Length: 455
Image (cartoon, rainbow, N blue to C red; front, side, top):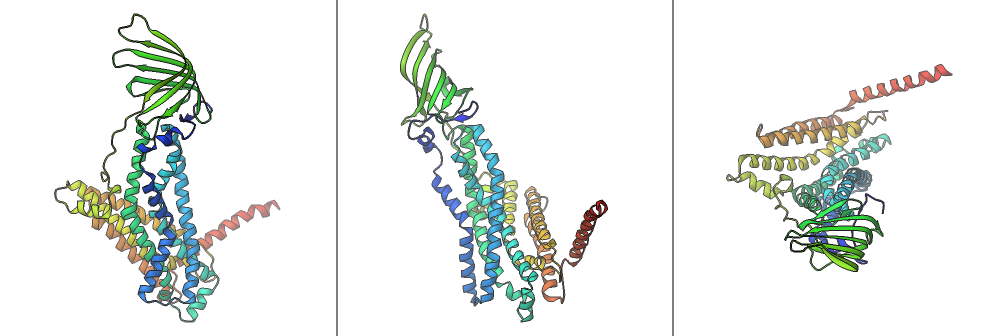
C-alpha cells in the first residue's frame, strides 16, 4: 500500500476491525432504518390505496392512468434527489473516515442514517414534480382538453394526486417524527466513535502513532491491506519510569479476547528494555515476539435527546409543556415540533400547486411552471427554517412564526388553483409565461444575428 494511506492490522481471517466491531453499535437497527427509507414508495402506494378504499372511491381507468403518469416521475425525482444529496455527502464522509483511520464500511452506515433526513426533503419535491409533470403531459398532448370537454373537473382529477399526498404525508410524518431522530442520533454516535477510536485501531504508514499507556508505533511499509507489515518500531513507557524499545523486520496485528487490547506479533527483531533498577539496558534478539498493545478507551456516548433533531414528536410535546424545563429549551422544542408539522401539512397543498403551475397556457410549451414550482417550495422551506429560528429565540411565538407563513402560502396556492379551475381561460402565471416566451425569442434572435452576419 502506498505511504500515507491508512491500513488496518489483520489476522489472516477475519480482519482486525471485524474482531473489534463488538465495540461499535449493532448494525441491525441501522439496517431497519435504511430498509424503511428505501421502501418509502411501496409504503406510500399501500397507504394511498387504503385511503381511496376507505373513502369509498371507485377507481376508473382514468384514475389508474393518472396514477401511472404520476408514479414514474415521482419515484424518479425522489431517487434523483436522494442520490444527489447522498453523493454530495459521500465525498465528505470518505474524507472524514480516512482522516480518522476508520473502516470504509462505516461510510455506508453513516449514509444509511442520513437517508431519512434526505427523504424528508425529497418526498415533498418528488410529490410536487410527479403531479406537475403528469398534468403538464396531459395538457401538452391535449388529453386534458378532452377530459375537460367531457365534464371531468379538476377536483375529480385531483382524487389520485391526493391519494399520493395522503400516503406520502403519512410516510413523511413517520420519518421526520420518529425515524429521523433515531437515525440522527446513530449518525452522531458513529462520528463520536470514529474520533475516539472505538471502531478499531488504525495506524498511518510512515507516521508515529500513539496508543494509551505510553505506547508509540511506527510502520515503514504495509502490504496485503495491512496483513504484512515491515520496518517496525515500537516504544512503550512503563509506569515505574522505565521504557521498552523494539525494532523488527516484520509483524502483524492479532485480535484477542480482550477487546481493549491487541497483540503485535513481531518477527526477527531486537528488544531493548531499561528500568530504574537496571545498571544497563537489557538487549534481546528474537525470532518471534508477542507484544501487547492497549487500544484507546472510549467513554460512553451521551444520551439521546440533547439536541432537538434527536427528539421524537411526543418528546418535543412533553418538553414544550414541562414548566420545569428552562424557557429556552421549551421554545426550541416547540419550534421544532411546529416546524415538522408544518412541513408535513404543506404536502396537502402541493397537488393544487402542481396543477396550477403544470398546465401551461394554450399554444404554449413553456416550462416556467416547473421552475417556479421548485423555487416556491424551496423558498417556503427556507422561510420555515427562519421561522423556526426566530421562534426558538422567543422573538415570535413558534406557532405564529410557522403557521402564519403556512396560512399565507395556503392562500396563495388556493388562489392559483381557483384561477385555473374556476375562471374561464384562467392561467395563474400567464404574465410570467408571456415574459419567458418573449425572453426566449429575444435570446434566440440575438444568437442567430452573428451567424447571419458571418454568412
